[in-house]
Image (cartoon, rainbow, N blue to C red; front, side, top):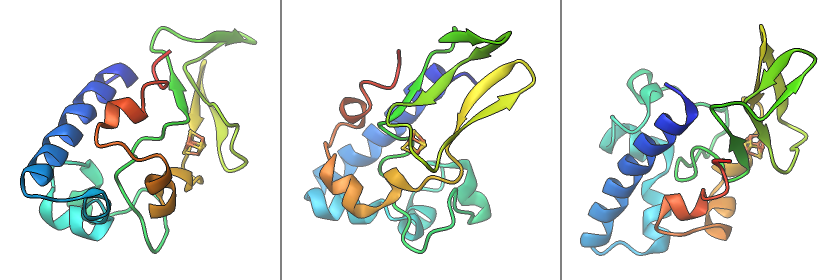
Length: 141
Ligand code: SF4
């Protein structure tokens, strides 16, 4: 699955969950709390493939899943640029010190595995919209 395909699928899953919660009267803070990893594993097992293994994408005690992926992620499935014969498909817009460019044969993809930026409740509160696609609108190039 390419980035764009994942992005659209994830947007739909996110929208369905938030829509359900809004119908039940959840406010912003309650929605954020609902997206805490421990709750999502129980209530929304289809949201992330790692939930089946009860596995976090990042080892942090309080992991919130509302902003998976990350508003700072930029991607283009067609390739963004060529660097020394390799094609770059994604990067971090804020050049986080905890991210890196991962090189896989002739492809370069942003590696966020050590970055926790979008997974704290504080970050989610700051960038919150009920519409995930709105928060992520700068991601597809
Ligand atoms: S490195 Fe961190 S801030 Fe940058 S795109 Fe990845 S998760 Fe987001």
